[in-house]
Length: 513
Image 1 (cartoon, rainbow, N blue to C red):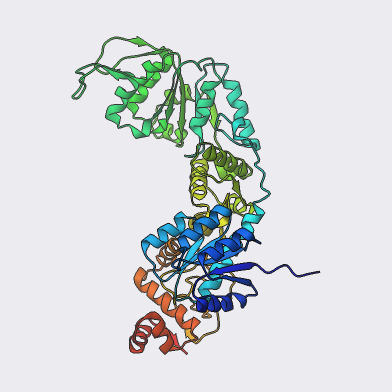
Image 2 (image 1 turned 90 degrees about the vertical axis):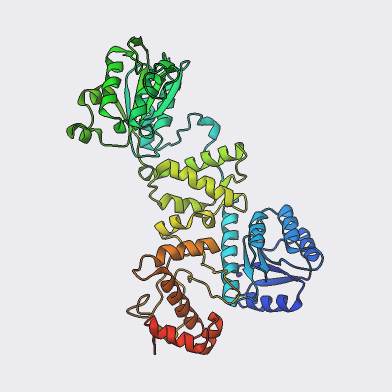
């Protein structure tokens, strides 16, 4: 059986020494390295084919610049992964690099370990892109005009109850955690009921101050209170012959609860400051994420109103209890984003879906929608990959397919090793990071400058030691490991004198053996 073909990496730089040195580093990992001595030659090589798996591209070259070449390359092959190389780490360079679709960028002079880490990250992303190539959507978003997506047994039960209550004016209570789609259920009930030609108005009871909610719901007469310069028609009047959705009703004040009860019992309201009774024909659908039964026992929610509202209850399941629906929800979100021209990404890799299926989703469907939007916007190809998922989600499920890379300078080593990677044996022990064996524990890794910093802030802040001191300790320990405990070379790498380094090693409690 033949061995798999080695990945092909094209190095585009007008400096022959850079091409040679970078080629030696990449060849050490058995990558097949090709070279181009200008932006024009690099673009021509990509268009001629075969297409390389990865490109290292210099920013400043004679003739066509790296950014111009990047645009031509991405135009010819939108999926092409490119790492820009620059000796000028300006904000403009970073912004333009990512704007035009670069996978990442690396500062000159190079650290070989950083080059290999970036190459591995990019090639892993390339493999994920290939696995997403045969992706087939699980649903057609046009078939889900209600916006409620899911084929799981618990959601099928929800759909059944919706169908059962649409034929009558029964009051419905929808319960469930925030972000589960309670308002979508209420709108679905309204659309399929005989009141569909009437108004549907949603009122978030938690978002309106207690002194204003009565005016919002029932209206007010001119001069009824300070600031009431005109008569106002309330939501109940506006919803006559329609449906009103009272979201977060558990946050409603007891005084207002009494007036809601009157609407349910007698079908009438009075505007604030008014004396006339106004008849209204309104269907009420309520929702809450609170335990109303407990509130009734605590006398913070009226028992009679509770029974009036809770005629039929629909309990929305949290997303973690219907993980099989995640691929369908992702497809629904992506198709709508493409249709609204908010994103061009229409696929998701199997690896990314596997990560999403393991996450607990405390924000439920709303959080998943937000993540899909965010990931689709930053995705560099036509599919959401694992690398596009926020670092905090990856860390939560223990997924870290990419190595962390620090782009703070050409000589800075990677901030975090790959999961399962073996650190070289060196004569330095950090009593905090490795109190027992001196081995560096594996940690979820980030893959961009911002991701690396986010990772550090989260991880390092877990210790009682101040963040900057902790960060200094980490950098000294890791650099000493990389340089096998050589104080002189470590001091030079970190930009300090040998005496200063020795002093900091003593002050930070690092032990040399």
